[in-house]
Image 1: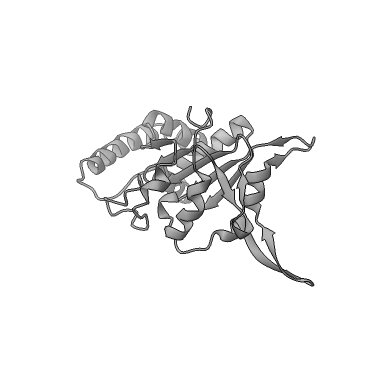
Image 2: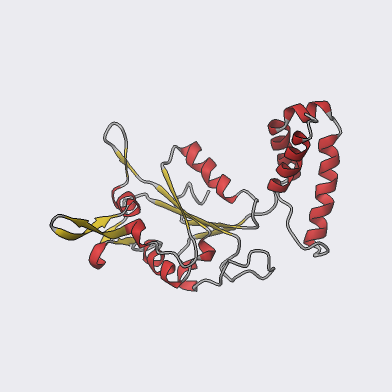
Length: 233
């Protein structure tokens, strides 16, 4: 609903809970052209927007792909222009310098993008911003995603919608496994129900803080692929 209404949206939750997959699905279902950029601490993201280049006449400013996409939109084969969805993954890992580039961009009242020499460009109408992370911007209180950092409230306050993601419902998860590992499931009819009981017990223990860790659909995939490697399919 948030994305469909054009709201900048932040999805957060433990690794493997489907944050990036939800955004990929939205992009596919709405035919929305999408650009994904991953935030890495202590990296220079200025080149996403602009950088210095050289020519026979000397140095010049060269516009980056993200600046062009956000300012100009996507050009369709028929010449029409449509807005992009821009996704920043691991937003909660942004350092101070990276946050500065994103703060103005995510401003809900007057979204702009900084070009060379401080020139502020208008964002193409309808451009949608989304981001993902493992924490809610207050840092990692559980000690399981320690590269996440407490974030400046002025950055996170510009995101219009914040959605916490949780573990998959087992009813949905088992359908994914049954589809992805059909040969194994067809030969071992009691495998999926047995795994379901085990996984629910593990997750209940994690929630009660009796087990220190996570158990997501990625872990389930690893178990099923291990069974596959053993030749039981």
